[in-house]
Amino acid sequence: MFKIRSEKPYFKKIPFVLLILLSINLLIISGCQKTASGSASSSQTPITQQVATTEMVVATDPPTQNIETATITATPPSTSTPTELPPDYWKDLPVIPTEISDRVREIYQTGQEMGRNPRRFTKVGDCNSQHPDFLSGFDHVYYLGKYSYLQPAIDYFKGSFGILSQTTNPGMNTARVLSYLWKTEDCPSTDTLLECQYRVDNPSFSIIMLGTNDGYYHQANPESFERNMRAIIERTIELGIVPILATKVDNNEGDQSINPLIAHLAAEYEIPLWNFWRAAQPLANGGLRDHEHLNSGSGPPATDFRMDISLSYGKEMKNLTALQVLDFLMRELADPETIPTLAVTAEPTLEP
Image 1 (tube, rainbow, N blue to C red):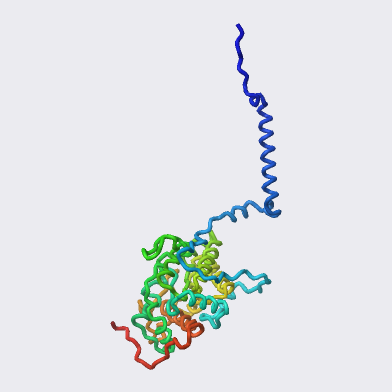
Image 2 (cartoon, rainbow, N blue to C red; image 1 turned 180 degrees about the horizontal axis):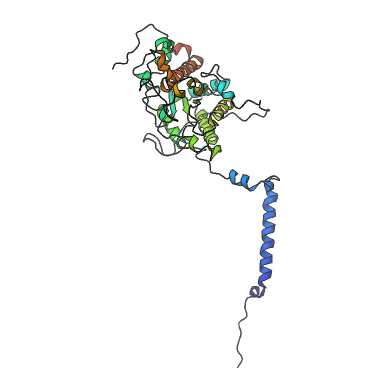
């Protein structure tokens, strides 16, 4: 009796080595196609650069559907050759801005057309910028002394100084400001922390005082601070709010590399720079009580300027120079008819 033998599929007769060769050939063809479709330079990119270009960016594209966005866009990079500046040029920049760019006037005007409150500002920073130490006293108890010319600014921005802000908390850094956590119930889940505070405050100005806590990991990831700051600045501008960048007093990064970045970004985007670092240099211990926290001569609210010695401390100097920045912006941008006049009145006292 004959046994009927079932035939095996033909492809199983193909030698194993031949299958391997065919697979390699297909891979080579596929790789060539990818190279041909890409740019000529991409095939020569070192491995380290390829890794860097795929690094995750933290919340650089916040949702915009729930917050009205102006048509104004971020300043495009200049095509001209930049002027070479000394590494420490930022140290000589003025504490208070001396002029306003057309760019800032455009941002401010756009914000007014969007319904921004011209008398409101938002604080964005860490524990050195939170209530009650930073500016809050100007809504409650203060004494200007020989700086009484700043009273119109206090009257103009009255109600802004003491606002509690979720964007000024211990440990605040650029990444956290762009996160979708730690928000109040006043905002939808699609708002970042920054957008939520802007929604609550409806400001025309934003004082951005970041970098202290970013300094701890700046050496390990030096690109993150600039990347996040650009996202913060550009989103602020898109919402018709004038960003005011502040240099910091500490050197947590170890090589003073963050302040030059802040100054560079202010120049690039043509927005105001408050060079608080320079104001703090003559102060006791550079205005610090430890490696990062500001010292004070009187404690909260640090708004008593009756004696010159009070301005030997960080918190008092920060409050005074911040008020001077706000006074400058008010006089440059506000409708002159809305600016309060300086009346000769008795100063508020520090007693409740």
